[in-house]
Length: 529
Image (cartoon, rainbow, N blue to C red; front, top):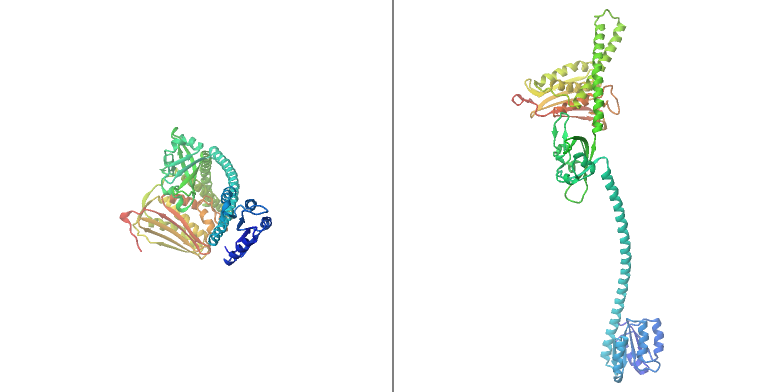
């Protein structure tokens, strides 16, 4: 406040001198006094005042004219007019016309003058700050208008992009060759495309009133139907372990025609901020694929079946030659005939394996379950393979911790096939002087069988493929087998409702295990050890 720029104009030097003295006594440092208003205007052109005080009557120009010009230079600066009593009316009129801050009558009261000066200076500062704020607001308004215009353009562009993307997505969904369906966590249908409507014979509106389980089911290879509303199908348990699942052997029911379409469905969880989980399913019609597979399998089945008769005839004929029924055979001829016999028997084994695979996959094989002592079966398989293990000097041990009278319910012939295959593989792939342990036990109504060897082991990347069709050995070493043994073993165990798996470590060995649940007869179940 004391550094305020004060400008005083009065034609009487005594007045300006008294004014300057008064203000300096009060501590004001920037007091500029002029006896000529024109000189004061020149000063104002280069200096910004905080308050202007002017006399009313002056020879060069009166105070109203001076303050009017000063007002044009600094509209926010407070201006005070000094006037005599006779000019009071003119002063009041000037305040209204020009917008002066105050008028003070001569002679003035010093306290009143100082108070008006302080108030005037404060008013000038407030008006100046207000003007600055107004300018800032006006600039902010301009920027906001620019941002608003740019935002409108951006929104318009994004809206256009979204419309294009939405049209493309709608085109993909509506004209996709596969059915597309969206369901909630309870299986209620929320959206379906035209292909799905054609498969079910229902409109999208009608489908929205149904659950997906009402229009689809899973068929097992044995011909059993099961609902999709269970965790085994994996549809409604996606958020527990994984985000997508492939459902095979599934059928969509057409409610109008009663027909059933074989399909494969890929379900995936939709990532959403909503609490309710939703899933999208892509339904692919595999009718042609199933028909092609059926024709292929029928061809293979017919071909392999027709091969059995000439193979059996050739094997029997070679046996007649070797046993001397058709006359004496020289040693060289015997070696050649034995090789031919072995090759034909191997080929017959392949034909039989292919036929068994076909029967399991087509669901035409019905398990012939009987009740039998399981220890006798395990011991019999062990005895058959023991000579082969002895030839390689393998320590072939049997740990059959089962009571002699314990019986299980299963297909004895098919179970023997699995045990022989697992033990035979262990003998074939275990190095000379190796070790193999066969373990069989009953536990809580279940039968558990495992074969452990100390062979080379199987790489982890090969384990998931080992039970597939025509999987021969590993990526490191190929076998000379058919690649159907483990696949057929898995089919047999799963047909019994059991599980088969492998644990293996490189250079430490492998352990094949299968589990049959609830097969032990309770009244004879005895567990030792």
